[in-house]
Image (cartoon, rainbow, N blue to C red; front, side, top):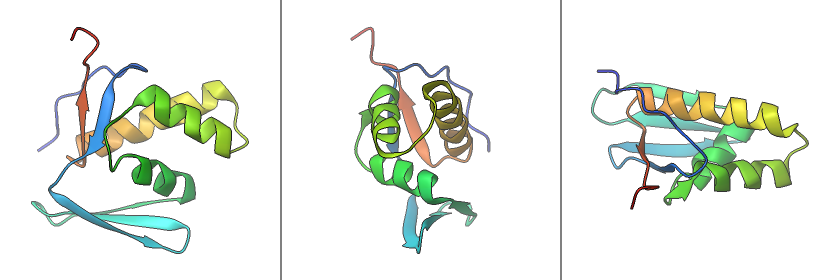
Length: 102
């Protein structure tokens, strides 16, 4: 069942859900959603992002790490990051919280 689309901003907190397992395969990562048995594969940069998602972090923190570690334009980085996070969220693999009001 697709998750409700949630507007993500730099302050939104994202974290991997507990209902998955993952492993690294060379420069990629494979994630298994335990509830529906669907595998999801991601490339080297996606695998790095997945590693960062193992503890709660803001979207901005993840973006900043990727900008520091990879040669990518800031706007492209943010667009690609948000696209991946939305895809992971729609597959039930991450949780998103907007704690800016707290």
